Image 1 (cartoon, helix red, strand yellow):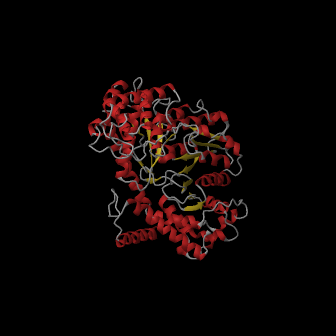
Image 2 (tube, one colour; image 1 turned 120 degrees about the horizontal axis):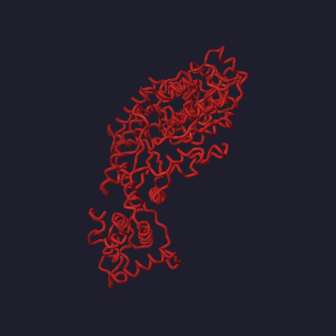
Image 3 (cartoon, one colour; image 1 turned 120 degrees about the vertical axis):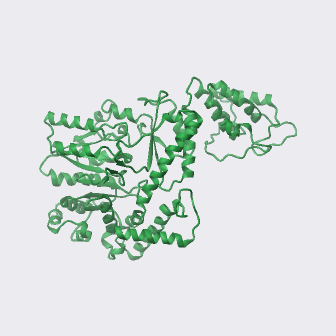
Length: 588
């Protein structure tokens, strides 16, 4: 399958060249746009695959009579080889993959040990599908959440302390322990130490690589360390089939369990070919495993297979754009204010031996002294709102409604999900912002994102003296209500760059006064704008009436003044007669 994917990739590249498609984006290396190469061509091939399945009535994996149309088996082969495991079984989600992995461990390794005697450790910082899978598998009462470090990985010191406490208490024994290690947002801990702890205390390792496939540690692929590992192909993942996942193992008994639990029956297990264990192993599980009917469809695999051909290219491009973004953002912040970039900390991997896949970014906003704050900074919420207003789906991990925050996992024991129980995780998640990236982002788009990050950061965090947020609110109202939004957008940046709000006002007053006055006699408005030949006195009165009304909470503002305009709305061109002074480079 790997060879066929390589051949398919070569065919795609030839087709690209022959097509004469001349759409290019910055970052393209072969004259074809990034989105065309990494998204559109695989999507077109996937749709053609789906059409072939529909025409041949082979949407179910067990209906695929033609090997070239058995996309599911072909994808399992390719993914198993990529991860470095012998067996793969495709399922309908990454969450059910974790659950089946735990159930297989219980059946194969702990068959005669009661659930309450098996300790399961897992990340306190991960997506809630992980603890949910532990609950579904029967380990709700013995699940122990482990703190996160500042690099957002599992705290191995805390893990070992918990193991030692469990052993000393006599409730759990060495050998009756499972570690469900989640590579949340592709963040990989020191795997040498993980494996040493597993060996020392006889812990069985299950890797949740939903966000981590493609990552490596010391040259070894994430997902190849444990007895079981899982991935997700749900939307926003490196490979996207809408919903879906896979479970991997080198253990034939566990693979037999996966095949029959997923929904195989009668002699259909034989259609898994080399992905099926030997017959004597399969027969031990054929009639004794409940059918959960959680197979992936051949339709999903038809969409998956072409993406596997460009998966490594997507990884390489993700990483290139991430490093570019980090550098450009730092430069733009320091242009706005020297040293400002030190407060926007792009959280690195926890270990130098990690081979990353940066398909998302996590930044920690530091306090004015350049150190992390255990409490939320006053500017964080405005910062997020400004970016969301510019159409970025950025969020904070500390939000109790965020599914990655343990506070939202209220199906667990209440005493296990409190800030008192997990103080370190609460602290390290404070002021951390999260944004998913696209595999077809370009340098142009990264430049835009960097500029938006810098502008919004400066507006909400730079020179946080008394009154600055007050004046920002004042200027924002003027921006919303004025007939000259581009001018006010510039004034926001000017005012926040000033050492004091009154200084900012002084810098903007020459520009603001004309903008809010009525047209002079005989003068016509040009759309929403008019020229600068205006009556300044009426402009001052208009500006301060609007400002004072907003500050006092009065309801006398006009309907126009109460309209909300998103910061990223398309702004009209400056008035004729030359650019306004606020638009010159030196005033930003």
